Amino acid sequence: MSMDPAVSNPESYQVIFENDRVRVLEYRDRPGHRTTPHAHPDSVMYTLSGFRRRLISGDQEREVELEAGQAMWLSAQQHAGHNIGDTETHVLFVELKP
Image (cartoon, rainbow, N blue to C red; front, top):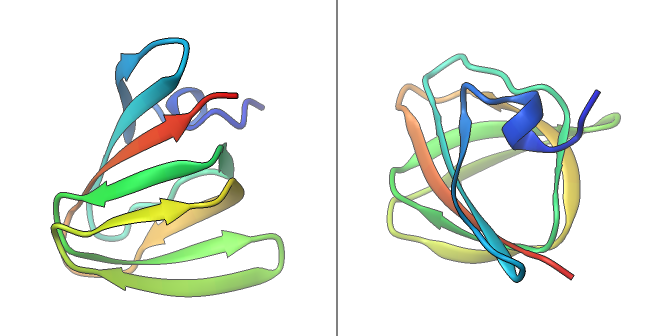
């Protein structure tokens, strides 16, 4: 199974731009939606909507709640996600390439 989120979860992740330096993904989901395990390289995330979700990585889980309009650095990671809130999630990821 591919760990590329655009391949493993194409209903949620869309590639909206890519070149030899970056790939930009748009992510959308609805309350209750779950992703399969996938990986992200070092990235910048920008939240277009507020959301609440649970991130699962191996046997570790953590809950995240973010407001719309936040930009943040994300170190490379593997996880699965679950929208545990009552709003849709809309996010942009700018993934850095080596």
